[in-house]
Image (cartoon, rainbow, N blue to C red; front, side, top):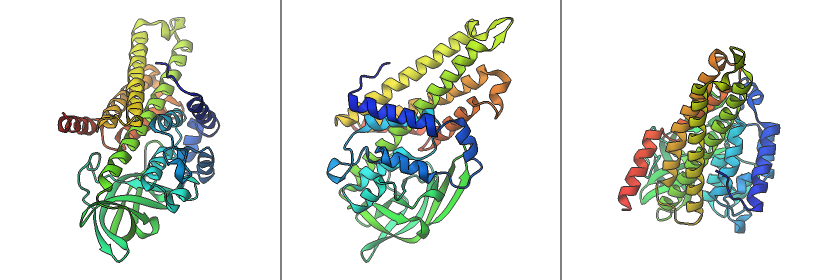
Length: 360
């Protein structure tokens, strides 16, 4: 499916593609596994300079004032290059912060504030957070545990969802006020939890505004993650097609074998269906007509398809596809991590079904 992009969108996509070619790729990912820091601050500064962290932030506050279509275009290109930095997640946080000094510092790249919404399998939807917040003077005191945070040890702070006395609140907490536990992931990044024990923070929104802000934040996180998965499977497919053209058995390319041709075509069809769903969802959300849960539907489809496409790609490479020396396995590892980042495909199908039922 060929997307119809305006000049600004084309320029944004091309800049992300050039960046990924220079600063991403399998070799960089292999080097990343040996480092403690999972977010390269030099690369982060370049992403901020390109304006990607400000894509969703309002123009009135110094942002670009663009939408989900533009964020998905960038996320797709970053997925193609296995770029581990959580660009889209921070861009989504920047919009949630609105016009504030913290937002300005965030989009400039000086600070990294990551979303902390997950609680086990909770918080992929609109459930009340288990983390509690109580008033403590001008601050909010938080208690509980947040899970599933990408690269938590590299953050400067977190945007935490909590249940306050008057309803849900979003609170910014400093990383040094939390207890962080991080574990390496298959793809060379890390994932972890933060424990909040009377942790002080600053409320971003009041109880009346928070549900809508959290819903928009979840939509941005889910849909941009789906776009990143799209980029991962696109590159896996491209690598595999080239391999089918050059690897020979019985004195002819294995790509001439009908069984492998069928698998490659099935993978391409899955990719294009995902692309169509993701960008239709993005444009619906940008136009204000996106139904609740639409982003979850796109992520559910992208997660399941990316795992299928990348597994198939590894299998079509034969034995070498299972070795670390070949790049194709790295795309499967990234797909596994991204597919589970905000809850698995089944949970997102459930969220979409519940949202659709509520709005019939």
